[in-house]
Image (cartoon, rainbow, N blue to C red; front, side):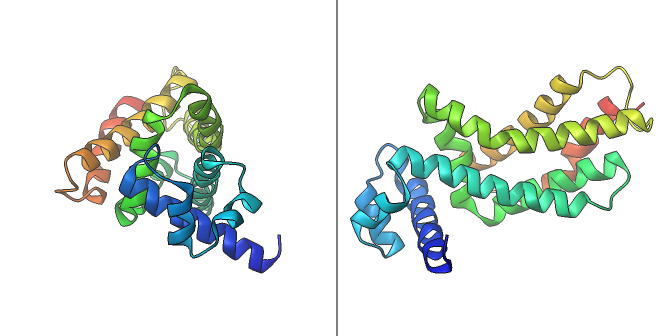
Amino acid sequence: MTSRKKEKYHLILEGALQVFAENGYHASQVSKIAKVAGVADGTIYLYFKNKEDILISLFREKLGELVGKFEASIEHITDAAEAIQEICRIHYTELEANVPLAYVTQIELRQSNLEMRKAIGQTVKPYIKLLEGVIRKGMEDGTFRADLDVKLTRLLLFGAMDEVVTTWLIAGQKYSLSEQVEKTVEFFLKGLKA
């Protein structure tokens, strides 16, 4: 994709993020996304098949960026417990800093149809795999219990962080999400440590 095409692609995704966050996915119109993105209505269809494709692409791009931040941040961390803390810190601070993204990833996913949830679920897999790798490493080096069910543990960790963000949104962001990192990690590490 040329730099101009990439720019339009990202403008459309950012416009969609804003429109979906303000109106909800189902009430959002492609024409509104085009207006917010500053492109013609027809331009949207040069990049995306339909509104569903926009939402799935939005998840893929934004979660891909988040996973990239996780990977870069924990690349040189050798302690699995510290890596879990860093992942949680990034998860909370990034979503706290981008409330529209938090809203779309937390609320809109749950209101989508089954097929769309499956497609979006595929975009979450790299995040889940990253958590799995950290848990396995901790088990191998003796930081975490050797008897952990890795697949269940990764889902519990992801699900807990997910629920903390959802509750924060529903509560109207009346408290700091990033200040919940220590308590979240402390709770998990007590259950994971050898």
